[in-house]
Amino acid sequence: MVGTASGLSLRQKAAVVVRMMLSEGADLDLSQLPAELQALLAQEMAGMNLVDRDTCDAVLNEFCDRLEAVGIAFPGSINGTLDLLGGHLSTDTTNQLRRFAALNGSADPWDRIIALSADQLAALSRSEAVELVAVMFSRLPVARASEVFGLLEPELARQIAYTMSLTGGIEAPALRRIGLALLRAIDALPQPAIDTRPVEKVGAILNFAPARTRETVLAGLDQDDAEFAGRVRRTIFTWANIPRRIDPRDIPRIVREVDAATINKAMAGAAGEDRATVDFILSGLSSRLAETMREEIEALGKVGVTDAEEAMAAVVSAIRRMEQAGELFLIAEPADAEGAGDEAGP
Image 1 (cartoon, rainbow, N blue to C red):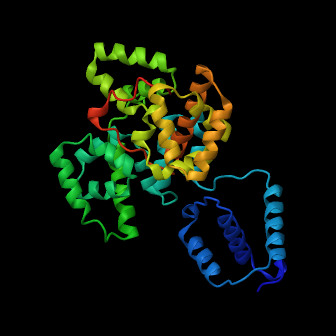
Image 2: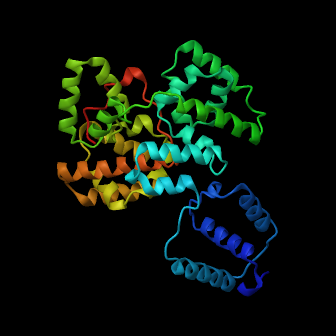
């Protein structure tokens, strides 16, 4: 048993901090560390045995003191820096810097490829060799790959799917060369003056609009252009879509992500078809937690429509943030369910 914090190396202290955080249920994304650091951490933890409570407390206090002493931290990479600067740089400048960073070896070319829109990835899929495209699809997140597949011609999608079965043995240097080749091809693609597609833009606006406004706009779009309205519906994700587009196994993490008072208010204010989402959320929790939430919902009593819609929108926003961070994937909305669920709340 290790008895003093001063007797631990920095790596051992890091192992203690990670072990303590995991034991408290922290959702650590250690995959963000460089591969060599992940390996060193695992090796260090494998070689340790017991650490007494006083030592754990001392290590944790030292760790907190170090955190409090930090003034500001910089990303340490061009991609992280560009993400930090956000909309303060022009799109052309951002793309050029990402390209230069990838070509000179200071950034991963696949980061920029994965960040492309579905339309751009589909255009790249049609213009490049199917072998390269298959590698690209192997690197894409599942949700994005599924979206792009839906934009391709069936025969091309079939060829890509088959060729993906042959991509398992590619080593890191070859993978980087393929990424760079696709990166050069991306620069030859036409760049739209407006980054967001009209369908996605309208869907994003309606996603956070009041339910009555959304219903009125979608009804009008149905009359003006039913095909466009259907595509807009598939981009919308609201409170009513949760049962169809969320894996029940993700419910506990979503509940932890949202303030308890907010999600209780959303469920207490749900009425009509929105009650199906309440039942879905409660069914994804342990019986004890579900019963506790039912009691809290009942204690809230009647919740006004406006307050309920704001709480539902907050839950939806949290799910969207988790999706963008790669913490969960939304189940693709089937084409024959375009109109289902859009009459309900946020």
